[in-house]
Length: 211
Image 1 (cartoon, helix red, strand yellow):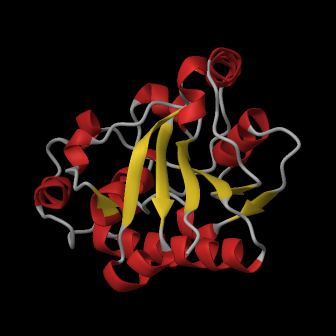
Image 2: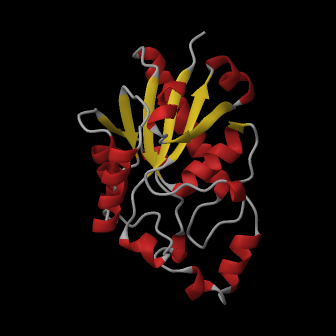
């Protein structure tokens, strides 16, 4: 049975990222620094081969997809939008540090959610649904390589929830324009809801033949 390779890549930098704001539903574009960083990484590193690119609907993701994978078809994947931060949207941790609802959320585990927002458990469910839809499309269209341009929180929780070997979300950090290579075996996915973590992306030119 065929294995399917997917690159999970974080979008480039925005003004909100530079300010340390929680942004899930706010549609920030890349800033000048973010675009420059992506073009620099595109020149210096090797991004994985892909036959099709999926993107969160947020502008910061679609712009990243266009820079890193020019001339590739981009399909919008709603399931890969960032966590909905509810009333914490647009705020920084420093602004919220004395907010009891915020403290309860960050200490509350997978099922805790911001007021009017979304829990990590809900994020993992829709990420699973999104990966399942993409896997089915790849199988139906006889594609073996795809990329998903998404958000740091989505990547961290997808890796923590479904990745093997098991990693804690606190160990998973993705810089703008970077991410993880995963491999999905349909049988393992169906039986265990798990995929294999192959490594990080992009890679140095001399490492590119590994993938």
